[in-house]
Structure formats: C-alpha cells, structure tokens
Image (cartoon, rainbow, N blue to C red):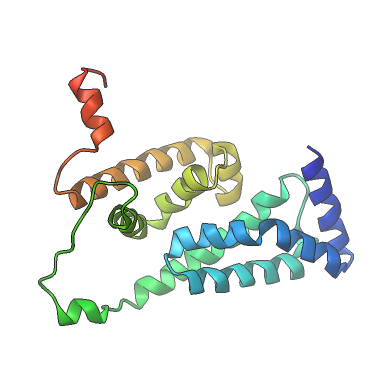
Length: 198
C-alpha cells in the first residue's frame, strides 16, 4: 500500500514539473515495460524504442493521469496502445527474412526440453502469431502478473471479456505449440490423461 502512495506522490510531483520524480518512476517501471513490450514485439530494439515513447508520454501527459487506478495500470495502458499501433504497422509491412530465401526447405527443429532454446523460440513465435486482442491479456496475466481486473482497466475492456480472451489466447498458444511439437501433447498433459484426470 505504501508503494502506491509513493507512486501517487511521485506522479503529483511529475505533474508539477519535477524531473527527479519522473526519473524515479522510470527507474521503477523501465525494465518491466521493456520486458512487456519485448514479449509483445519479439524485438528488443523495438521494445526499447516503444518503452522510451511510453515514458515520453507519461511525462508530457502526466496531467491527464487520474488517481482512480494504480499508476502501473496507466503506464501499461500507454505501452499497450503503442504496442497495438506498432503491431498494425508491422502487419502492413510484411518482410521475409533472408534465411527463408536462402534455405526454403529448412523446417527447423523443435525441442521438448524447457531448458532448450528451441522451445523458447517456439513459444516466442507462437506469441508473435497470436492476435494482439489475445496476446496483450495473456502477456499481462501470465508474464507480468496482473489480475484480470487490472488488465480490464489497462485495456479498457470488461473483466468477462478479459477472462475470455486469456482463455482463448492460452488455447491458441497451446495449439500452436502442439503443432510445433509435431502434434504431440505436452508431457504434463500426457501424465494427466494417463491417470484419467481432466
């Protein structure tokens, strides 16, 4: 509770033009926002650029912040909106990596070992293929640890819709990962099925 009070005090100071308070807010949120945007874009450089733009907007639009929601929700809302805009731009500009041109028959190798970077790559690709409508709530819930109510405030959507999007997003991720594994179910799911539990 004191963290939120401190954050409220900091944003009031930013509203009064205190750059030191803004630096403290950046220190609190910069890494989290870059990580969130990286999960969304899959591109560290782009995530860093969008993070910088997020904090530029936090600074110049601080007077628009209303203390009805946590400061984190407001900052993540700004980052989410920038990420959505970036995703729209990226869909308009589809490029083909040179690796695909030089070796079109390479299917890639998929691994089941979670310590293996192949699975991490598969998860990243599955996240990138997920529509932003589902990707944003899934990342906010499963990677950033926000509650469904907080996510609803961040993306300006009813809680029931957020729950449905998280569920559909997780299901789509599961299907994409199973496809990457050649149709095999996850080992944990296989164990559950062998014991007759759902």
